[in-house]
Structure formats: C-alpha cells, structure tokens
Amino acid sequence: MKRILEAACRHKRCAMLLCGIVAALPLVIPQLFVLSFLGLFWGFYLFFATPKRGYSCGFFFFFGYELTVYSFLISMYPLETVGFPPLLTLLMLVLAWLALSALHSAICGALFPVAGLICKKRGGLLTALVTASLWMLAELLLEQGGLGFPWSRISVGQYTFTPYIQSASLFGSLFVSFITVFISCCGAMGLKLKKAALAVTAASVLISNLAFGAVYGLCIGEGKGEVKISTVQGNILSGEKWQADSFDKIYSAYIDTAFDIEGSDLIILPETALPVLVEDGSYYAELYSYVSIVTDSELVVGAFTRSEDGRQQNSVLGFDESGITGRYSKRHLVPFGEYLPFREVLSVVAPFLTQINQLSSDLAPGEDSAVFEAAGVKVGALVCFDSAFAPLARDAAEDSAELIVLCTNDSWFKDSAATTQHLAQSVFRAVENRRSVVISANSGISAFITPKGECSSVLGAMKAGVLTDSAEVRDDMSLYTLWGDLPLGLFCIGAVVFAAVYNLRDRIYEKRRSSSQQR
Image (cartoon, rainbow, N blue to C red; front, side, top):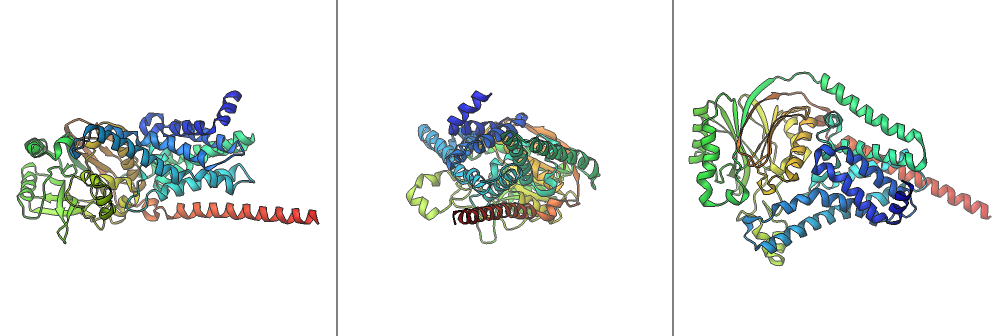
C-alpha cells in the first residue's frame, strides 16, 4: 500500500484523474454508490498529503469525474434528426462531451487549491468543513443561469441509498453532497494526520445521517390519500418523433393505447406526446377531452402551446370532459435544443448549431409553477430538464401542489446512463418536498416515486407499455420546501469566510512574531 501511495503521489495528476473516475462511477452504475466515498477519500488524501497543491490536480480530478458522468453524450450518436453526416455528428458529440467536461472541471477544479490555501496551516476538521462547503457552493454555482446544468452532483450517485438521502428533506440534495464530501474528507484527514478522532467524526456523521433516514421514514406519517394513475410510454425514438410519416404510429402508441385504459383516476402522456400544437377549442384539445370522457379519467398531457404573445411553448395541459383545465409551461429550456443562446452571434459564427434545434424558432419559457387541479389533486407539473432544478419542484410544492408530475422525452439518450441520472433527479425532488413524483416518459424511464424516494413502479428505457399504480397525495411541507437552499448556502459561505479570517489572523500573528524576533 505504501508503494502504491508513493507512486500515486509521484504521478499525482494521473492518480487524481483516476480518483475522479471512481467517484463518478455510481452516477453511471447506481449500485456502486459506495465508490463515491472511496474516490473522494483517495482524491482528498492525495491532494492534501503532499505540499504541491496546484490547480491542475483539482482540474484532473473533476475532468475524470465529469468525463465519466457525461459519457452518455456519445450514446446520442448518430443523432439522426439533425441531418449531419455521420463523421461530423460523431465529432460534434465528442467535442460537446470534452467541452462540457472541461468547462465544469475548470470551474470546480479551483475547489482543491482554494481549500488548501484557506486551510494551509490547519488540517483535520476545519479542512473537511471548508472543502465540503466549497464543493456545495460549486454545485450551487453550476445551477445558475440559463446555461446552468446541475446534472453531475455527487449526491446523484446516492439515489438508491434510500436511508442516506432522507436528509434532503431538510436542506436539499446539496446537503447530501455536503455530507458525502465531509465524511470522505474527514476520513482522508484522519489517515493523513493519523488522528482517530477524525475517523470517528466521519463515522458519526454517516451513522447519524442513516439514523435520521430510518427515523424520518417512520415519523412522516400518512398523506391525504391516494390517486390511481396510468402513464403511457409509447417508446417513440427521437429519429421517428419528428418525422411526418410517423404520426400514425405515434397516434396509435398514445391515443389508441389511452382509450384502452380502465379504472384510473388520471392518465398521463409524456412530453409532446403528439408533436402538434394544442390550443383551446382545437381539434386535438377536443380529442383529449374525448379520451377523458371514454376512459372516465382526467388527463395530463405534454403538448406544444402558444404563449400570450404567440410564441411556442413546451407545456403540460390538464384535460377533463369540458376541455383544458390547467396549463404549465417549461421554465428551464434546454440550450441548443429548445433555444439557441446568443443566437445572433452563433448563427453567424457557427450556423450549423441552428440545425441542432428541431424547432424553427426559440421556445418561450414559462413564468411560474402554474399548479392546477386534476382528478381532485393539485398537480405541480415539470417538463423534462425542469426536474434537474430543485427550486422549480420546490416552487410547486410551496404553491400547494400535492403531487408532482414529470412529462419527459429521454429518447435522445436511448437506454444510456442519462436515463437513470434523470430518474435520480426526480427521486431527490420527491424526498426534498415530501411529494410523490410520477414520471411519464416517451421512451423511458417512467416511474412512480414515493415521498421517501422509493421507486414503487418502474417501466424501463426502450420499452412500450402502460404503467399503472397509486400515488400518495400529501399537502404537508418539508423543511426544504419552507427554507430552500438558503440556510445551507449561508452556512457554507460563513464556514469559508470564518476559516479564511482565522487563517489570515494566524498569518498576521506569525508575521508580527517573526518581526519581533528579528528586532
């Protein structure tokens, strides 16, 4: 072991790259959730065990991490819908994979040297606290703005570890990331400094978090009742969905299948189930109402709509026998998919990027949670990418939603790791807000998720079928729904500032002491 560590320290960048890959493997293979702790542990040990703590070490750790997480981008090949030559498509996907990984690594890579600088004279508990705080702030930063992409949070790899993630109901998925990093860094500092107390601290935090998860599951009580729901998964691949000659197949997969459903209170169809514009009083609006009449169920349907100013939107509509009963429009649009950032510049500099967007113009984002009632339940809807952003689901729960419905189309990713990573986002939205989440996906994964984050029913990727189950209805508020990310964010900022001031004070004291000795 000693020789292995010495070799790793000599080839630190390569070792850090490997540690990043190990830490990210649970986001690709969820059953390996323990590897997140192992990759972080050795990454922190290698970084803090040697005096050279350069930015490149942090960059290489995150580059290995992000490359592993975003490897699903290659599965999008050949991306038939854009009409590019195969070689150009492959090159574009590889460049996107490398560029996204490098961008996130460039941002997060500063975490290691900053933690090392702030805690230069101190190790142990303070180092672990500062490192976990900086990690959490980096993850929060990646969520911000129109180009925000919080897909690769370390907590995502823990979504199958149900008792461990229950604390997300207190401070969100960022808190799960925080304690994962804190536990790993405490263990690394304990080994580095040969302090058993740090190992005991790491074990105590882990056990306390698991104990909370076990007790919390017993204490939240029952909800208001249940609603029986059916979701239809047509398994229409992205290469077919936008082809005019595929419309009959799509119609049959969704409308004909929906007509055959019996005994459900609510039927859910995925994002843009029929790739047509649906407006109040239109043929398709009347069609969905007719389905509601025949099945004696209300409907929640993904559809294209128009905003008040005439722009197209990606929406979720509620239907009963009388027509449209509610409407939510996607708030966080996919860059380069539903809108082109910096369109005026990029359309001149890189006009081929306009072909990636399947629509003739940018979609208009929604403005609020737009909670509506369906089957006697207040529904908070999300569309696809929305589910990766915790504040959006929190808005819905805060605005009285008793059930969260996600309509999505993940056919771009086939059956790659992206589908389970997307499922993991919804698991956290369920735990954070103590709400059932029902996912209706075009090609999978469709699922029923309990308020505890357990998947009670799942229809896997690349399968067609109807998934029917009962979802618990709740109207109580979790602490995260009430507080959001603010308390944890303030705590982490305070911890970093405190450590920086403490370190600065020590430096000033040492400088004065050195000056007095010279005199």
